[in-house]
Length: 279
Image 1 (cartoon, rainbow, N blue to C red):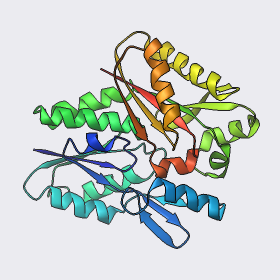
Image 2: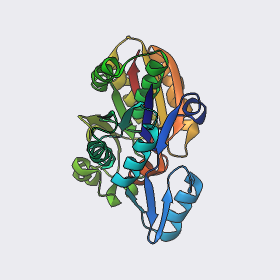
Image 3: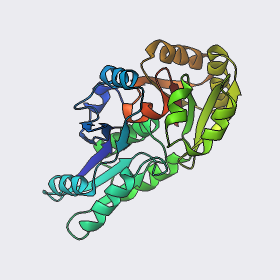
């Protein structure tokens, strides 16, 4: 049997996460001396309220090598193989921690660690497909190449509403200078080889949503896709994206999930994004 592991940036609705045997390792959120495990010890309302009260962003940190080693040892106790799929290594050290733990346990457990080169609902859709394939009896030798091929077919579109978070965050890298020069417009971001990149600049939220969907249509045309939308405490906007996307894209199914707070710390409340995932 294959045990499936991911991290708390994997944005899937709770009912989907609970449908499959998926182990979620929490990212750590730290407000000065207070550290919380994402999804366990802090919720989004508390997270945003603390930021507004303090006027500063918390830091995030990946699970330690020791945490992964302990988890992998427990999951492999019955001889099961382990597939760990994590958010892009370009934005976090989570993948590296998992890799180091897997190397420490080489010879004791069969562990494959996969860099999704994405996060949020992109990671969520990859994990969902992995869970479905495992349930269907796929072997690791079949599953890993399939998921690696999927990575290049995932299209990501992100719209920032509150640029304060992106300016304060040290993890937006290549887009910081772009954001500084476009404070009066809405930046649309994408992901290329696991890193954030600017795609376009549009004035106004309504026009920006339309442009995101147009960009998605340019990327996938009329081919059938899964559509997954993430939002930072703005579900009405996420539902608006689904409604508009259905008029232009060949959506076979849609999901809406709240953006992981370990990602929202970089993008800010009101941010929305979506991925197209191949059928």
